[in-house]
Length: 376
Image (cartoon, rainbow, N blue to C red; front, side, top):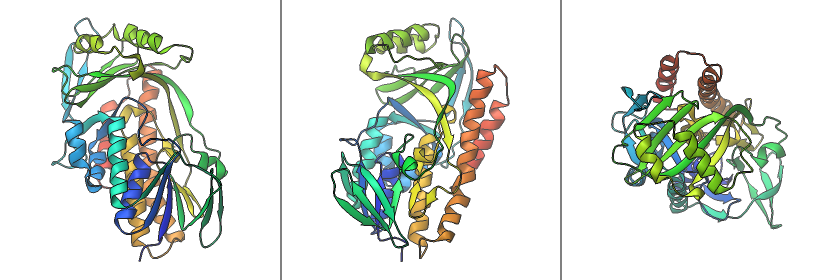
């Protein structure tokens, strides 16, 4: 018998939709809420490593992801010269197993819709435009007061409510994301036929210039610079600024730039990072995904770690007889050090760039790939 019979999941992003699906499919009554009015995601594209694809397959959505995304098995490294010279193409680790691509890119809104639809099909009750204002727990459950004044009673509340998690603050957890000194421009546009994988250029006027195919006809491109206050720029000015930085990069970039024409498909954010110390639960309320940990996208593991949190927690909730210390100890043992290794590795790659230091990048990437190749 599962440790829980009814659960509230706050946040319908990757982690929240995933755990709602796992639990609802096993017969647990699940309410999945999100403060947003629609089941979409901000941003342009997302890069999903093989271990993320493994979890998406376990959720039963891999065929949808494959149809709407773009899979590939290598990464290219180019020089910041006038030709964007290809220095080397490296086979990427197939961390999800040999029957899945090493990596897949796809539009973030498409992935959000796929996962929200899957949760609903599994039986989760999805309520959008909803949040809670109070959590009151005792030994037997959690009483939740919603923003509209209604209330509910649950065995467990799973807070997958993002990097700015209101639940984290409600629980008195003071850990907050911190900027690391880098900012990233992202833009979504058409995919030239020459773009069939991620290529990265280190150096030039910025730290990184890269791109990832996200579908048969789409890609997202990104430029990493020193973090700056870009908030005063209008959308057309944002597009012009990114294109100005991208003008220094060549090779496929010369085909990509003309397609980046829509200012509404450009965004700028700072790299941030945090890791909530273990344990991630306070009684019958638990943080997962970006609410518990975040890191720069230098290892492209943010989405994968969120999906792994959901899979491990769901497995324990469905396999353990009670919601006690043993379950939380097992969750910590399986998730904390793994997530910390990814956060630390992602931050180390950034720090080497910030310090203009040539660290052991291949070695670090290989270590993380070996780690995440094993199911969480």
